Figure: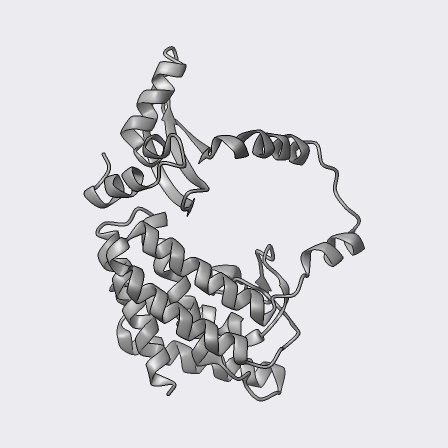
Length: 278
């Protein structure tokens, strides 16, 4: 069953047919049972949500099908986008691997200052649509962040693009970094800020003591400095605020309990970090 906030979101976004069905596990299970009445479908659990207001909603579900877990990807989108999306899916399923050199040239794009600023402003619109009472707060914070990003000098270093503790594998004799889907050229301070932002979010969820965040930050930055033998990148604090702000959409995506309140807490924390840099 949808919460009151989610029901309000579905009511306001009439551009996406079926939005209420893909967001509501009970409605989704009902639709599947009507389509496949002989299937032994017992339950469905939302794993995460990717939502662009008035464009599409992509939901990852884990189904219990006759006692077997099955992960499925469900998408609701505008009618005019459906044919294009289906065509893209057909092309992807038949695609052949590229040569490694070609793949690198395609993947390692440049995360420019303008692209960063545009992304932050776009995210504020998304947050404001999902939770209207936070729209002005998200917009004001996004404009401050975007202004500082747009005014910063360009930096072109290879970066991970989504670096956090989840992307590091530690063995007895070696360490590996995984998940390079977002690798690009950009500001390495973004990777460091993203790592710290993950710890900030865990502290807001009481999964990590607030004092541990600073200890993790100091240890990680000291290790980075020793490993690179270079001064730390500038703007780590700015990117920490940016990445905490970007995480403000995660509570809704993960269908976390009290997600509007958790969204607001992340916005407040991002603002506090940005204020501390003044």
